Image (cartoon, rainbow, N blue to C red; front, side):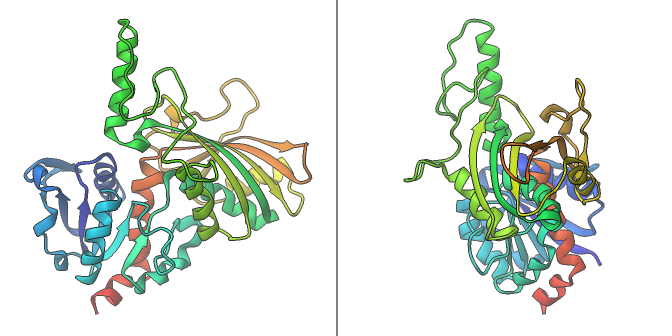
Length: 342
């Protein structure tokens, strides 16, 4: 079954990645529409060997499409996603705007695919935060095996998670330091080149940032509301690829060997865990890959039933674009397009 697809925000990092992954995975698209703001009308974007010219989001007729993939931020999603859904398209939104709406399913296909049936309520499906997506893919099989009680996670998030301007700031600051220019923060609150910043998104009253809150709330919605989770989210001078140091406390015993075996057999994961120099995956090595990589699996002897591991994924892929395309595939497989069009 071929369907018509719109990609909203086609000129951005995630939008371009969505187009690339649709082509790579041979998504059955009869027609692809690249949509962007009025200032980008006519701008060309790549879709495999083809070149698409961007159309104006504000004048586009969403009744032409079956699926609309939104990669344009919360304000755009707030205004246009309901209009696209009302026109009959199934909307898959990458922003945070709809994630905690009880009538909008928040989906990671390897974790809670059945929740996609909830899309019938509003014709909208939310894509989780990039750092949450890779985390729950790793936690799901471990939760099934030994029941997770508590998670402590520290993230090492790349600049691409904050957009192209953030990546440019890292590049320009790095280049400038070598010629003795003083780095001037713009997108970030402090120098990002040769530095790490323990601050992503705005601060909340309890001292956590909104990025940290997202990881807690989204993990509970996607995986299990009973899981206790605390996060510290840190921006690091990396262009692409998020890493996470994860500590898990289980209700039941699970050895490190058993955990590795469970993770190896789980969809979306690759275990690279050799206890030797270089026997682990870093952000540079995960770029362009669909998988979430697990390394450094080991017992935490300071608590009962404790486990620690290292988790790395391409945030523009699994953290955003790939997960959105996987949701679109799920929508087709579950027959939701026909239901929406009826």
